[in-house]
View 1 (spheres, one colour):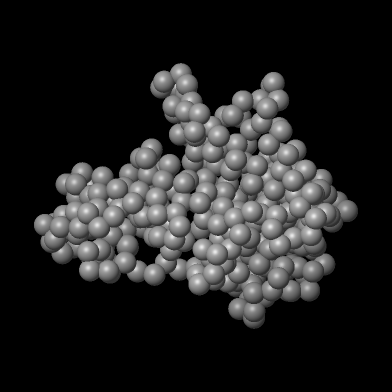
View 2 (view 1 turned 120 degrees about the vertical axis):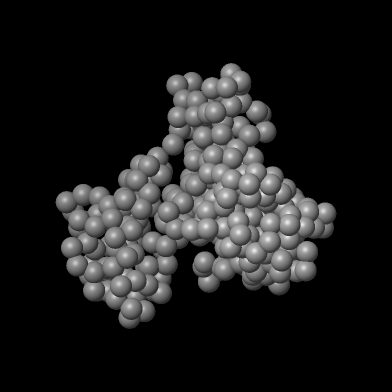
Length: 299
C-alpha cells in the first residue's frame, strides 16, 4: 500500500498545484492518463485490507475518484462493488447494494457480449449480493411489493401503492406522514417525501419513519455520496493526508467495535428470526436458478 500511495504522491508533485491540472471540476487529458491507473491501484490496496473497515471505506472513496475520472472504467466499477460487498458483510449498513448489483450486472453483460462467457467468481458474487439485497429490502417493503419492482423504481417508487392507501414501505403510512406535515402523500414518491421532510427543518428528517425511508434510498442506491475529485485535489497521501470519510448514517457500526462484530448475520438474534431470514434469503436466491431466468435479467 505504501508504494501505491508514494507513487500517487510523487505524480501529484510532478503535476504541481491542483489548478495546473484541475479546471472546472475536470482533469486535463494528461492528468487523466497518468493519474487514473495510480488512483485505481490505491483503491485496490485499501480495499484488499479487508480486516480494517476504515481502509475499505477509504478504498471505496478512491474507487469513486477513479469513476469520476473515467465513469466506464471496468476495474474501478469492480472495486466499488467489492468495497460495498465487504462493508455489507461487516454489517456496516445500510450499503447501496442496489448500486453494486447494477454495476456488476453491467460488467457481466459486457463480458458476455465481448467474450461470450462470464467469470464464475463474478457470477457467484452477483448471486450472493442479490440474496442479501433481497433479504434487506424485503425487510423494508410491504409483503405485496416485489423486490424487482422496488429496485426498478428506486426513489421514484410511490409511497402509496393502491387506493386503500396501503404503503409500499411497511409502517410508513400516509397518516403518519401527514402528521409530520407532508401533504399530498398519495401522489408522492419516496424521494419527494424525503425532500419535503428535509425542507421542514423541524427535526422531521430525524424521526424513525424518515430514517426508514433514508435506509431504503441508500439500499437501492439513490442516497449516496457524489462522485468527485475532492479527495484527489486535497491529497497528500504519503504524509497521512487522507481525509476522514463522512459517515452518512448514525446507526453504522462503531469503529472501535466494528472489527469484533460477528460476521454471521444470524448471531445475536432469536432462533425464529434466523429461521425466517434464512427462508427469505433462500427464496430470493432460488429465483436465480429458474430455467427461464439468467444472471443478467433478474433485476
